[in-house]
Length: 173
Image 1 (cartoon, one colour):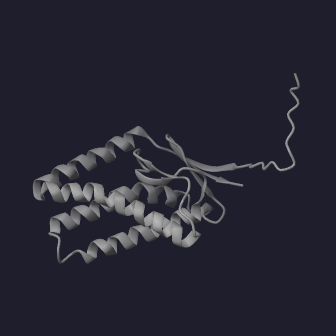
Image 2 (spheres, one colour; image 1 turned 180 degrees about the horizontal axis):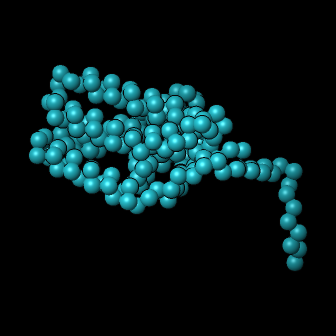
Image 3 (cartoon, helix red, strand yellow; image 1 turned 135 degrees about the vertical axis):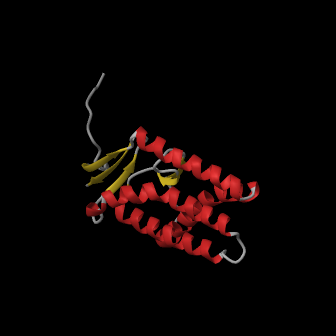
């Protein structure tokens, strides 16, 4: 038996150095979900069930379509390693592999402002309660992500973001 382990000349070795890690604490998740449940109860009391359902499922879908479209227009190809995540703080359509922090910041900054502008365009046709709930839900989905990106802001130029189930890490090569 030959246990000789050699690398071929075509092998690529990636060496990443951890710059900073943000742990996802359960107490933050519970507080965030408590705020969410209270907002949903308020919304259910003030808007129709159909409007509530459309906002609840429509905003994450708009985020996913918008991120996919932005990535496709900027990169020339569809995002390959993006997936749906149902864990906070990365609830929604998120990168599954290492991704440049500058790219994530650019995508989420554009996502934040453009979706707010799109929602504002619906002002004449939506009731104020539905519009405010849609804006709240949009900000609710993005705020934890933007806070983590803000924590990593000084590594924007060379940082690589890696999202794990229990933490989000920033690495450099």
